[in-house]
Length: 445
Image (tube, rainbow, N blue to C red; front, top):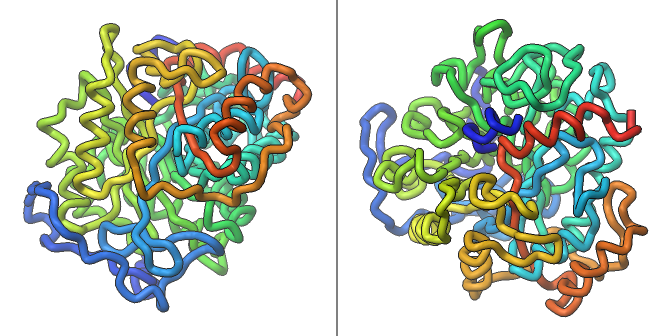
């Protein structure tokens, strides 16, 4: 998540297996940063593509459905499962189905869910025995609302399963929090998660949230980082893909760049060897100015090198408007870049930044821009595995009456047929909340 707020709130090549072409109109190392929008090669021959059931494949900078139709992901980020093993909604434990129906009413087709490896892994001190079930219920609820799901490894532990505190310690030993890069426990996390969801192509795997303070060689291949040994993106990818020593999953994977995932400027020289890979960027105002976007990430998509998705973005200035969000979505649309906005979380304000001001889904000033962008896509269609809302909710919050408000909104918008998204949590919001929410485990351990 957003790095500044975190402080205040807490190679074996698999190219031969590729179903799509990595595709590049420029040579590695040529330094070409041209991001002028242009036609992409598209989906090519879908008959040889590798896809998880119901899922997608990539060809050049295009993401494609199994039948060879170009596809873009547009949606929101939903935090809280990184600091609280039950997730949170309206000051209650659990995330209700109605929350995803509300996102659907905005016509989102994807939601990004932030996770914590220490809540998932049975050997960790912070292990929560119901966490996997909570995550699975949320995946099913989101898909039923018409959303694909990005599972994002948001917080990790530097390879130390004895980490006793969730949040409150970015780049600090002893905390499960935002660390510079993945670790050996992240491999085990993805082995288990990818094995569980390899039969569901509507689930995408964002391998590591926001790498920072590392080199590109460490980013790709791992290496020493401060007091621990980092695991690189290629190693995480191999654990997900390898049919013998890994999960054997063909789902789309996502790799965020350097500088808290904003910087993909050298990604062309460090491409992950394999298939069905997207690259993530996190452009925030004011630190990631628009004139830098071409060189930092736009060129990858515009030159048809690889698909790009902005899995976080927003305006963190205290005087925020919706201009940043509108500019980012317009820039992305021109270059066929996918996006999920940060974040669907109520009451965080500009600094978070939040897309909604309450749990009924009332948009903030940035939420207004995101909602307008989502509703403006005339080609919108529900994703996931849509089914009518039945009042069920995730994490045990189904019986709580507060969900009715959102459920009513979703119902009027067409229930499963609509998608929406808003969000608020920022890294800082996570850290601060995590100290009391995530560490306690809410009785789920």
